[in-house]
Length: 241
Image 1: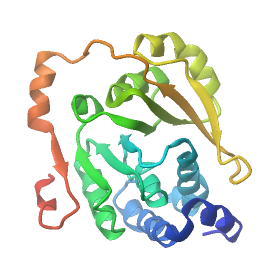
Image 2: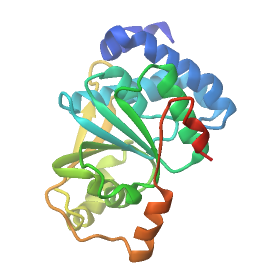
Image 3: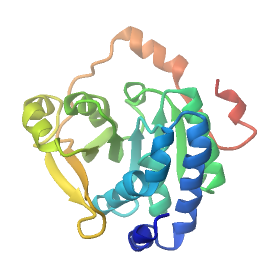
Image 4: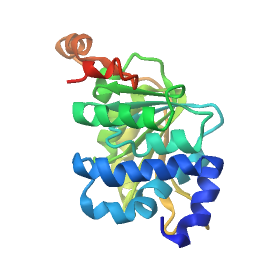
């Protein structure tokens, strides 16, 4: 970790900083070898990834349930679980090689009591227990992210979409579509102000109402065959293919 980032890391992870360091090492080694992050990202893991994600915890209430959609290598879901042991986190990821990595990380960091890995697409998880918070850190347009993620939130729950500097432009472009999907007016938040530079940009969308289901009968049929919860226990990891 660059020494200049240590104060921010200590503030965000507290006494669990050792787990954050262990996760950073896993990303920089296995994560790169297995193609989950690019090799050029390894030197920037703390500044660009871990601290950026950890700053979002200021928007999450105590003991919240969190669903992280398209978790990939665990950003932000693993980071949130490390920084906030009071959270219950579900990592949703459709690719087997990624869910295998996530399960291994959950075991290595001793997060089994609070983190579950689910191999599925977001739309295949509709109907599961609704979450207080749904997170996504992806390059998909905001209207598509809302369509995938908002149905996983409880009424009154929130989508926290980690975005870049163009967040305000995306909000302006997709505000009407978000409303049709049951979301309140999006709000752009800046997390970690005064702690990290630049702060993390998050678009916050409250789920105001439920809208009609978008899935067809054929897609509902596929859900039963595709849903698989991947646990981090070594005896069960062999089920992921």
